[in-house]
Amino acid sequence: MKPGLFKISPGFEEVMPAEYRELVEHGPYGAGMGVADLGAFKELLEEHPLCAGCGLALSLRLFLASLPAPQDTVIVGSTGCSSLAFPQVALQNIHSLFGNQNALASGLKRALSLRFPDKVKDVVVIAGDGATADIGLDMVMHSWFRQENITTVMLDNEAYANTGGQESGMSPQGTVLYMAPKGKKFPKIPLPEIAREAGCAYVGACSPAQGKRLERMLRRAILVAREIGPTYVQIFAPCPTNYKFKPNETLTRLKLLEKEGVFQPKEYITREAQDLLNKLEGGGKP
Image (cartoon, rainbow, N blue to C red; front, side, top):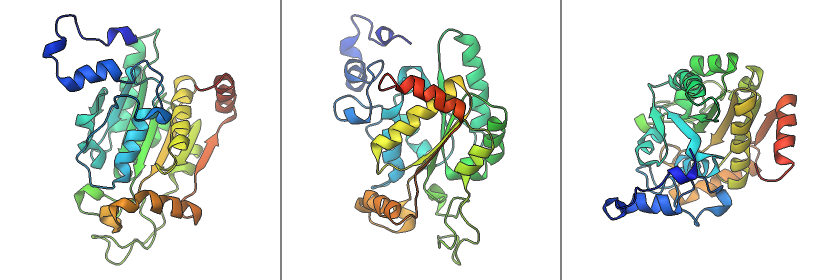
């Protein structure tokens, strides 16, 4: 999509909703905006129905501000807390069946490649830990095995948060949740390492406590997926509601967990992906 195509037909400006007019006039489409520009443009998500202090909501906001080409991006989501916000995202997005998101994204990416052979269309999956690491793990991994040119993003809040706080595969061992009263019995799934071994060309693990790092990893993942193969980014965003900490402590908690080594940022890059990134980033911001 050319930036000039995203405009209101002459004569209809006054009848269009104010939100839409503002998005056309001050939105990020074709403008090369990023996390450092937040507050200076009309964001793709400004209100949401998620809990106060939700790290997932902040992650989604940063995710949308980090897209290298939002005008040519389609998000594929799945059932979970994040799906409650997708209807308010001013970006093309599809809600898939729970766990089916990577299968749908694979077909969508192939269809877009046929429909727009001379234009790159980024297909990005974004879903919670239940849809990615538990119920949808089979389809996620097979999209990696097939080397699909899509980016998978997990919003890791370490629980099935929107259905009462059950444990997920990403909950830490020993964690007591509403439906795990004796504590979780096995360790957190090492999905970044699994993604690396399953053939992802780029893997990153980050949190919304460091917005610029999140942006860098996400942009890298999308750019590598365009030319080389599947990529994966895991965003750590623990749930204040189910983990019983105050909403205004989310970022403080994330920084403390990183300082204590409980959460560790990670980045795995294949040689081919590194060569591409050196080429793309050598001239400045991708």
